[in-house]
Amino acid sequence: MKLPLRERRKIQTALDIQRATLALAQEVGFDHVTTEAIAERAGISPRTFFNYYTNKEAAAVGIKPHFPEDALNLIANGTGAICADLYTALGIHLDQLVDSGDIIEAIGELWRENSRIRWLMDEVIEEMSGDLETALATRQPDMSPQLRKALATWAMNCAGTAIKSWVRKDDATLSDALARSWKVQQDLACFLAA
Image (tube, rainbow, N blue to C red; front, side):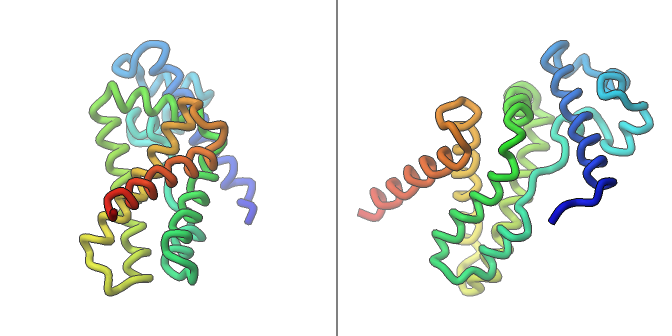
């Protein structure tokens, strides 16, 4: 489904602000970045900046990544093997990141340097993991909450490993990176079960 023009423009402005924030952080260091400098770099007013983000940390993180509804629906209501549906759902999620390699790489650098960015990204990952847990609870209501949490955390780690591999250019595509990460996880599970 194609978004209306107004919504696409809002998303583009949010991305422009995020990219301006990340570029300035690389140039002058995140501690020296101001919201005024971000607004100027993005070609907007400071007031417009605050219509999108509450502070420079939020602007660096940008629009919070999330699992698309069709991915969560597949996990919650899929009829295939849960392993296959979870893999497909992770692929759907990663597909939406394909055009964001520069953003992911820059956030990764900030994540290593800035505890506030690290905390915000950890919150985003925890929220996404919670969404997976909820979908798993719908599909498998008899699964223990601890197992649901472990499976959701495992899936998020698998996706995170794929993203890191792709950003490092170890894999040509996110799909390749996910396939490799998934294979390693399957091999590990087989090793532990043996």
